[in-house]
Length: 150
Image (cartoon, rainbow, N blue to C red; front, top):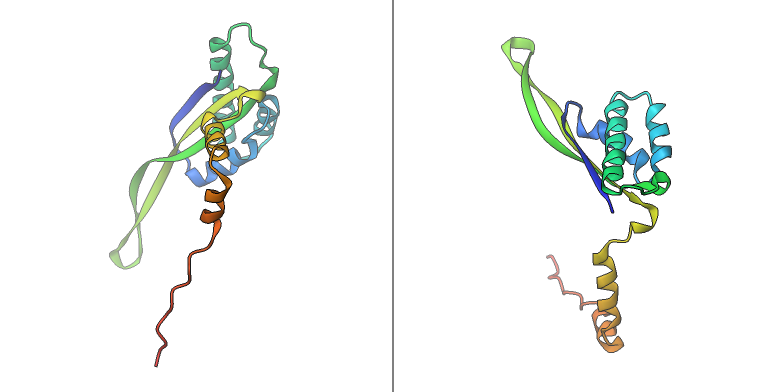
């Protein structure tokens, strides 16, 4: 049974946060915590706390469950509010500074439970289709003729 933890409106750009998130996606939880603990980037600290929170949420949902097989099943970074500020520029102008923030969502689960039910249902549905129909769909559409330029 999976557990979710969310971090909302963290004041760093989503692009910077995604650099860290891509490091730990799909990792075992213990390894992900070690990577985040020794990473010098500033969003590593709240991201590590978020993973710890997801682990604790999983413990509360699955009392008596063994947490050694936990993996970071899904982790997403979405853009949040953007605070706009003005910065003085030459000749009386002002440049707009966009201070970005982000939302992070972490889902942890046991290693064997990573199969999404939608994928299995689609595979069964494809198996029921006759082969003749599949072959017809694979044929390419005829190319359109283009008018010659004069």
